[in-house]
Amino acid sequence: MSTTTRALGGARGIARFVGVSAGLLALWLVLVLAITWLFEPADAVLALYPGGRSSVELPPHVSIVTWQGRAARLTADTPGWVGDVYASGALLVLPVRRRSCLDLR
Image (tube, rainbow, N blue to C red; front, side, top):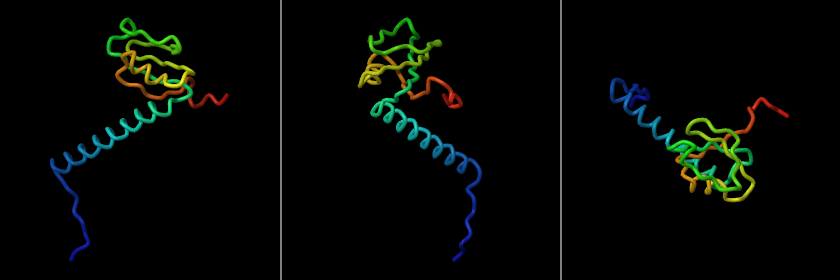
């Protein structure tokens, strides 16, 4: 019995690599979305809206930090606010920091 392995080559190996990579990326995205929804970040979130700013009615307790095109950085202090952001029409809500990670104040 040989203990050597041979690498998968050609199109089959590439397809397997792409499939596994896409699956891992999808799993990571689902985990980040679930953690954002359940544990609500203290800083802010990045919300992506399909229609841009004109089609959005945010709840009064959600504050806009910045808005550029279809992406908004939002924050709030009320429990359940990430769910309210989704209810306002956001397709995707991801955690972000208000300042850069190098701003250590």
